[in-house]
Image 1: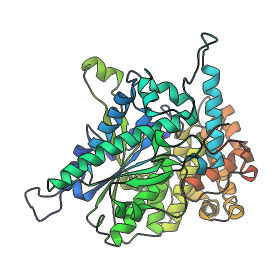
Image 2 (image 1 turned 30 degrees about the vertical axis):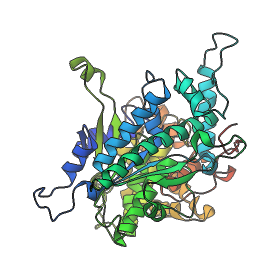
Image 3 (image 1 turned 180 degrees about the vertical axis):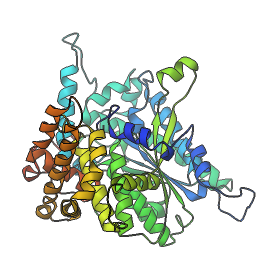
Length: 478
């Protein structure tokens, strides 16, 4: 999921070109201790844990459980360990999940396409073989009898009920431990689930699934709750981080000590979402600052496993503010103008993320044929330097008026023209250069919509934006 990968993709290029912005840690505790520098012997200072909040993508956690872990208890135990490690790192831990009933039509279209692709790859070995052995009203006992719970993930309705039950089990276990820690005089912290059906398998089959936010501290849940629902977990992560910024500025009792926000997910869309957020905060700063780290849990490489068979997964971590600053340096490297304004820097970052979208992401299908992110990376400084009017058009992306926002399409077209001209200078890329210069209006619209969505400014993903209607029920079934 996320931005188009490969050696020429966004993540690989960032790691290659801006290595100083990335570090690897075995645990979130090690990451936290490396970021928060203070005298640990000074007991007048709040602990590093008390200064840290951890946001985790629940969907990523669920998908990261090894296929060999088949039973419900073993599966939930893996998730418990992930959460326990996060609780060790931060005093507040929030695990977020998608809310299908609130997902944008663009995400539903992408899910439908993924489901179709998965169905085409499924091999039926016998007529009586079922893809999902349970209906979507199973009990915990039925789950416990299942030898391989992973098979439930192939059916969206079953998957949701399964996930709800797993996190319910994890929540009960964490809450019980926190109660004991508090009773012993320790600060156990707070654990929050965002976007779950708290009843799990206890939800009667006749009642609809109702997602909510639950936590071990009602005051914290109330402080984090929002009036407008957010469907996708990736967007929630940044929205919650900014909510904490606001609460830190208000000196809320549960957040006044927080200085570090760790966001853990493997979805590379978060690069664009968080980079845009940094640029937006430059235009409209919060009253309080919060150090933001984006970390991706990655399995060891094949070479690392050959050297050490017992090597474990680790976190590739990125200081988002540093990364954004270095990208801005690159974007303005050919400009002869004086220091750009915060608004101009936001326009440049919006152009940059729009270019990343058009090269391929969940919402632009396979992206523009012939387009490579590294070519756009090389060409976009010339666009920023030579086409100030086109650059300014990217300010429209942040308008809540869809008609106004679509005007940014003109700016993105000029980005493509500049990329095409740059590709013309490379051997063996003449044909691809022509394809990039002939980019369709539909793809331009979808890429601009995506940049707006990443900027937490969601428009209805309708035919005006190049999307097709997708008929799905609220639980995600076609």
